[in-house]
Picture 1 (cartoon, rainbow, N blue to C red):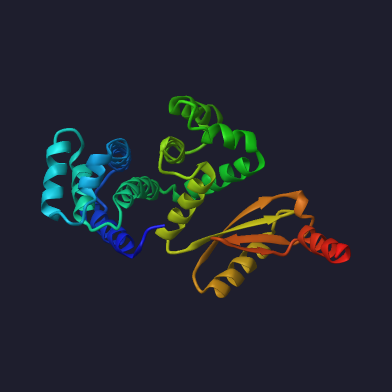
Picture 2 (cartoon, rainbow, N blue to C red):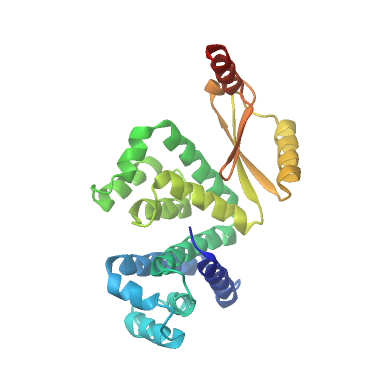
Amino acid sequence: MMRSASRQALAALGEQITSALGGRASVATLTKLAEELYAVADLLVKQPRLRRTLGDPATSADSRAELVERLLSGKVAKPTLQVAKAAVSERWSSPWDLTDALESAGDDALFAAAEKDGELDRVEDELFRFERILESDGDLTGLLDEHTVDTERRTKLLDSLLKGKVSPITLNLLHHAVASQRKRGIGPAIDDLLEHAASRQGRSVARVTSALPLSDGQHNRLAAALTDLYRRPISIRTAIDPSVRGGLVVRVGDEVIDGSIAHKLTEARSLVAG
């Protein structure tokens, strides 16, 4: 988890990216920006000395920006160079936080591309649906998380499952989630991406699991109740799981509200056994 200085730096970097790109950047430009930012982050992962130098708050911000200019000029597009220089100019609590911020900026560029293309809701929904598939298939999760297996083989596995079935932006986000050495695993990575997508629209995500599909009325009432409870807009993503038997399991961030019949039966059995 980022400490205070890095959180402030990340927020400042986000503002600079928004200001630099504005609404002018095309989907293609944003997609290329993401790919190149991921590549810069990967370079810092592989080059510890460079990572420490660029993330050292004791050195001049201008000198760090000049070093990035020398390293990347002519090798990446102008927007990528601009974002990278802005990133190293910030004060980070740890050089690793700089690396993570560059990856986060890449994610943000892809979400901005989805937003420009009118597909942000679709991308968010596809990420949620794939998260549910992984939760029910531990073998698949293990294959995608196995870092002893070549990254290309794992991304090919993703392609075989999803290519042509999801947005290219969704696939790009998942490719990076699998390839990155900084992610904690495909499941947590998707969880972070969902929160990232929701935050772009000023809301949080509630993952709701029920035994039967919710009606439109139930969906709207639940969204209103959760919005009132958490005092911020809540977007609901629903999944069906007959094992809950009845009621709902609601997860918002790290908080779980388990109102399922299955949970109540488990509690009752524990009381009887006790």
